[in-house]
Image: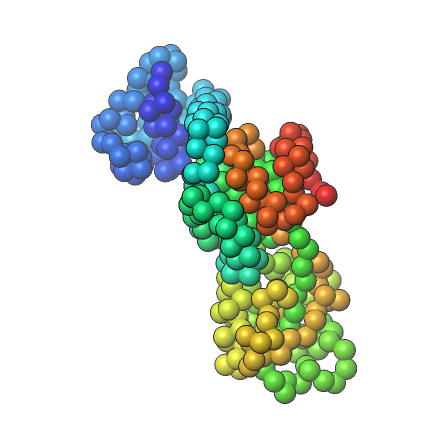
Length: 314
């Protein structure tokens, strides 16, 4: 048994049983991947994959049992490497962060700047995606940390830590009717075409819930993944925008006006997630605390030791 065999099994599942893609991911040949899988199956005495001719089509019942063990073995091998690096190269390494656009654009810059000042020899890699893509990057080991508002707390294999709470604002062009005429209400808001986040992004769930509870059916004329796009189309007069309050800056967004909407939509929680069982190098703990000061190393370690499925609050 060797790690190349284990990686071949893991990648076969991740790549939808497409051995050509597995070979590309592992920088080897398709026959080589097939051989590695067959040799492991022969050693274990069971078939891990269901086959149709030479094609893999799924996992066998023994394969369903074997796969989580393979994942754990490869995770621990990676942890072993990280532990060695932490002692031998304390100031060198990489930190890969997966985040949604809103987090990368508005929440992360200050933390990245401060972290870089303290750890100039650590290479930072920032990947952007939807909340579910962020979770997937964590689960597949492509990212060390994930930051998003939606989805991260839904995965038992992830430890999701609360970072900060935030609310929404309504953005409109100067002189818009919503800037006067009384308090902002959902009923008034629903009278206008709306522009906001795609489903599953940046607190969209709370926006939909608020209208649904009032029995309102607003017209969403455009949705987008990030606030910059939303604000652009609001400036063009296509509709009224609903964005994260942090995404509006009075000096930068001089062609827009913002109305506080915290009384209309539930407060949102941005979370930082880690893959359960992952060894974290010392500088990773430092970045976490730089981004969210209550998340000290003891707090994070305590969360990592909690039972899967337990929601951690501070």
